[in-house]
Image (cartoon, rainbow, N blue to C red):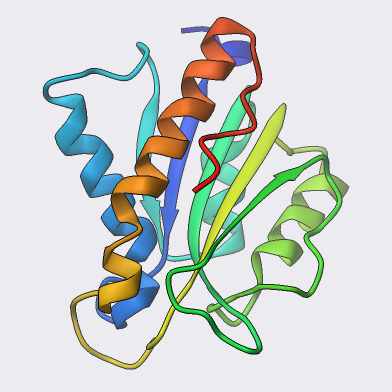
Length: 169
């Protein structure tokens, strides 16, 4: 697959901080599905701790980058999913990353450095707990399959040339 058509799906988070592991859980779900229903050739499934430098390296030169991350919102609604298609403008304050440096800052840094992917789609999943410990809360665990479906729709839309707007979880 050429660099111009490369697709990367990145699960951001920390599986040892409860709902902050939702990005990794979606990647695990997609990897399991790919054993029986492969994604398009050259599609990379990656995990990242949210470090902006690592994110930039993972999505640089991609035609499509899909990021799944935990979010905090006020008031919180655990399991609610926000889908943002970014054109280089950092996301607004409605949902913020659960990491110290937000995804919006990583997007802005990437834009300034000229390293944004062709398309960037973010799925931000509101969590109930980001405290130390393993396992997702029930409302967040319940949305993993739905988010994986939406990511697959985004990837399929990129390959066919029909941006789908995702499977709106």
